[in-house]
Image 1 (tube, helix red, strand yellow):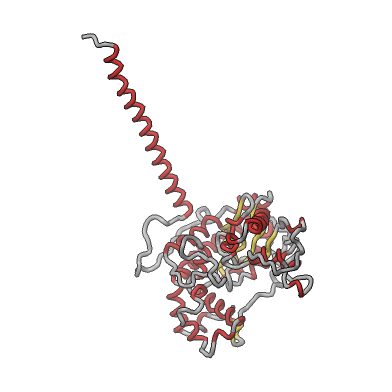
Image 2 (tube, helix red, strand yellow):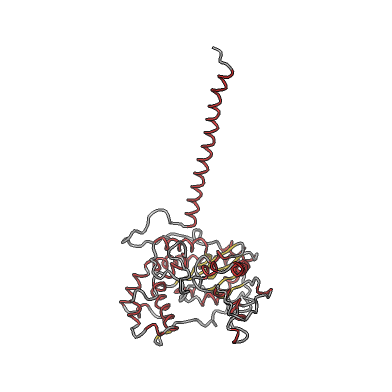
Length: 408
């Protein structure tokens, strides 16, 4: 039987439509699967070890970097050196309080106008006249605060200060959130400064690069044994605010749960993660940075470790920084610093004094047992992160020595 033309068309059209529809569905599925794999790959790259076994409650902590070599950890120094030599990179020296980070400041010579010119602290920190109260640009760049009561306007319209190549010391852990609270004009001024900065250094939290940076950025930091760092940090606070003792003893204050929780509880993990809705430093209602009552979890620990591994060029630990000082001139060459021979030997470090005892070099055994036990439990994730940092310190020193041999 011969089919009519109309019959043939009516039967073939659905088949063509089905074929086209199948192609479209296949394409969509491929795209979705590819996107999912890409997202998974990105998350695993940005948050390594986020997938797989977790540290269940009560389980003994395990190091995640056991067996890691220099190919697996941190940004390759060859890439870092090339970017800074071509003047297209920003270095963030993340100085965690009471880790002895003055040593890092010495390595990068940020106190010297020869390295940082114009120099924020040397030129603008104090007003020309006492009646001017403060310098408005210094307040903005140092604290991310726009204060109209600062009447010293030096630097505000000076081309030298439109995009200085170095911010030798800025702010606090809540600096980033303060910037976001500025009005558009002042926020743009800070962002413009950051986009031109070669070095940004200070007691800041991770993520400050989000304000602005050159085409490439890298972090550098050092960690300290958490219990001794905590004691030193609390003593630093008491040196400046002795009235906080308020008739009580030092030991009772250390054991008081509500006292300086953000300092005493996993402070290094908080700073090096600084992501998400918890564990992030923000400006509180009274101006102080918060997270004082937030619990640090495994998520924050893995987040901090991921940042150390993916966006840091070098990671050191305080107790072994003596291995780094002989390599200071090499570090200066890698980051293309102006001062190639940093003056480490003449650096005056910043010990914390309490009751005429230099706590910065105080042995852990000198801390009362009850306080030591309490702080050890309170800093579970900092202690684990510090052990990981010891691995990264060894990798960093080995990479520096290998890089020195390659430079010849």
